[in-house]
Image 1 (cartoon, rainbow over the protein chains, first blue to last red):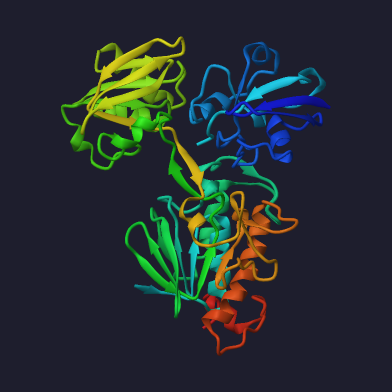
Image 2: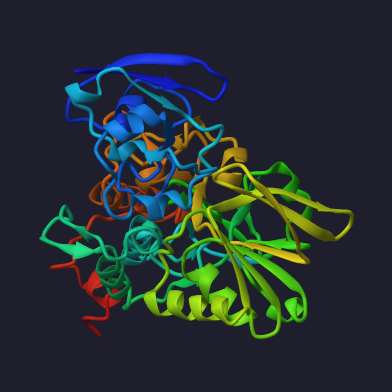
Length: 106
Length: 338
């Protein structure tokens, strides 16, 4: 279990407990957190589960796999600290993670 | 005006197999899809990715699945309307009047929405100001490359579309190529070609920059691009091209009076009919208790919706359930029997 905080564009914070092994995207979808569309269902094929991860956390969580950065080219307003939340696996190590949800996914 | 027993919206796997089922039970159908090719998400999002959960097919790619579904439709004559988006669905006394973006219209008792997560639309620039120049000085696809001759064109993106057009248009335009990072995901040969053109001064390359703003009155005059380190650069530009791939949007479906739940349409599980009689939803776009977004579920939903269509298309006939192994009617339709 890890506590994950999702911060929407209007600065509303949602903190939920997400089971280890799920992705940060699934944690958002299962808890009805607005702003994560995840149109392709976690296939790294759509860039609509895009989040920003603060630098201290960005360097701590496991690196992106091949193809994620290509997909992020398509995201809405990608930044240096952009990630696809379907590619961040929840574990005890990321307990307390905060991610920021962009104003739009598309 | 086209008249048909059923109109299918969406040429993905579910739409294709639904067409098969309609034709098999003796109904006509036509298919409209916003993409320029058949296959939907299977072709657009994951043509090369293997799929392992199609019954009796241990492993196949999105492209193979699509090709197999197309060849399964070979015995039938089905009209496809590609690169057309259904804009309007309106109730008439004699059925549903459906209009598309290319001005085609259909009159049909049955509309089957097999639209996946919606229609594929180009992803757009983030700054709001870009909208006022859209389809005038700013485009997400190239229809007529001659309008760019002798002009300054700023191209955004890092994939094949952006690179191909940068290389092609550099022959007789001044090109700025702008991309958010140093790596390009386009084909190696095209990336090399582009780098050569950068060296010879034919293309001005700006990496780690993104669109910040656009300026101009009637016509576009210049754009501002912003570096990762927040530095802003102004570039004189007559035209802007953005290539950020496609995104799925529900689009006009939202205006047809259907019960929606997030991006899905509520249906019953007997006919896969929506709250509007004669409009069905099948595949990823439909929603009911226990819904699974699997291709196999779409096949089942399409088979049942097709039977429901029979009632409205042939009100004076009775539908008879038959097997392809034994029914001479079905075998005739499949072209296996005289």
